[in-house]
Length: 263
Image (tube, rainbow, N blue to C red; front, side):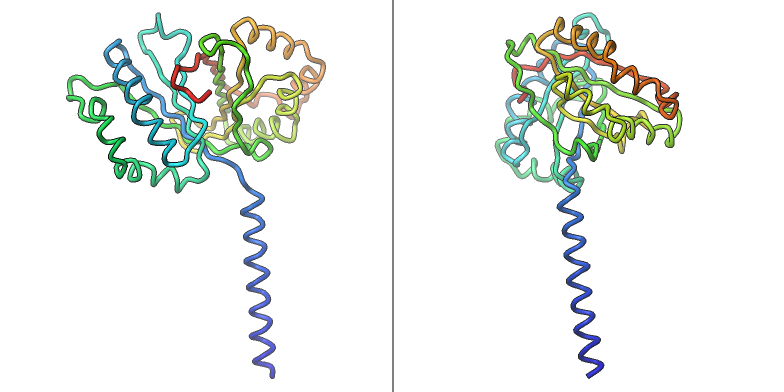
């Protein structure tokens, strides 16, 4: 009798554990993001990259079930020595990130269409350097979004911002400022059309968070930031002593979407 009761109790506890774990997993539906950053210097490299991304890589990602892929070039590319191209991939898990290269190699259309890129000679590489930044979405902004912009695609401005902190503790403080502190709702109220907010979990600059906002054009971007700086709620939030000195370096990169970007 005791043995039966113990077995029943063990079974009930197992069910409760499984139910709790499943509920926690369902509740934590935060996306992961990979930002691929291609550095290049020549028009020939840019041509190969554009062809690869538009004709093979992004179509293959779509076929693999990954939607809303962004491809952006900085406004400063025309005069910069180090030209850049950013590709944003929203992912459901880190496992998806790890298995994606093998999945792409099984796609015959991708393999055939990417030969100019993948078979490039050592002295004619399609980029000078490639970086990968992996992020996890903020818990109060768990999903990315495609903004509803009305302007011509070529005029739109997507701003990628990066905030580094001097220590991990101060970094967590800055993340708290965005989430519980109210910075995300402030951006939403002022219609910054955020694409994503994410914590960098692997990259060359850490501790670090990144987010992307979007605007109809450069004038719209300037007007939004003026409104932000003058906003009473922002002045109150930024003046709080508990949020002082939590950023040591920030970078703002203004970009246009490419013709083949989903954004």
